[in-house]
Amino acid sequence: MKFSIQLSADYPDKTYGGDRVYADMLNQAISADNLGFDAVSITEHHLVNCLMMPAPLQFAVKIAAHTSRINILTSIVVLPLHDMRTYAGEVVVADIFTEGRLMLGVGRGAFRYEMERLGVPMDETRPRFDESLEVLQALLRDEEVSWDGDYYKFDPITIMPRPLTQGGPPMMMAVMNPEGIYQCTRRGFHIQTTPLAGNHQLLEDQVSAFRRAKEDSGEQACDLTLTLSRVAFVTDSPQDKDRKLRAAEAYYSRFDNIFTGPGLVDNGMVRPLPRSQSRDELAESLLICTTSEMIDKLGPYAALGIDRLIINVNFGVDATETLDCIQRFAEDVMPHFTDNHH
Image (cartoon, rainbow, N blue to C red; front, side, top):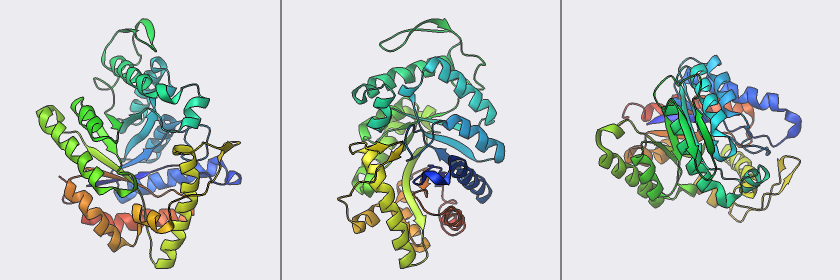
């Protein structure tokens, strides 16, 4: 099993400064590169201080310039917010500047507040995403493309420069529903998923859908990977664990507001709202624990044959402590899983 650090720029305090937030994220990427992580992953979100990254491809290029081997995943970029005719060219340039270390994770967008403020109604995100993806793939694959669809209509164009490889960088699809995982794998996409709140039965269904699709696709699917995303942090005492859980609780009081809640945002700051979930329930659903507990909790993922685990360590904990956690995870947890990679 390989491991990735999610550089989800969280920004609960405006006075801290965006420059410092991104310097922290860059330091994490450099550290992850030195410590043998497989990848770092970058989200895309606009207009909010939660997962704040309006320019993931630019950040990918910056990371590549400061690291030597680590892969850079966009996890995920929101296709319906972009015009594929210009975006395809940006992807090609980012692929060139990252020297082929880019994997483009794509999705349709999850925050109603962000999508609708940017002119994409939430109930249109699925059809817009589907067509955007088709257009993007065509532009990266074919010399000359014209289009006559619901959202795109254009005369023949050619994206310049041409991609380094036929079809551009590898693409990963963010998808939770097992049937969706099956279909996307059949179409040749790497998969990123999450068993929200640690629901193990859902995870088994997700993995088996991925496996079945790989078997049904044969040789051409042998390189496709399944990536799982979880909030995780290595702690060293019950008191420390309690502090981290409090930070996670504060983070989720904002995240839930924008993800499933009413989307109440004041001048870019997502408002914390009361949560119905108890701290014990939250603790149960996250991987915030000692190294030995972490090894036990990751065992089932390795047993299921998960290819990569993205750990999100950014939920309001101090920057130095977060770097320390990344190092401890690399030194004390990863060696238990990196040798038996399927």
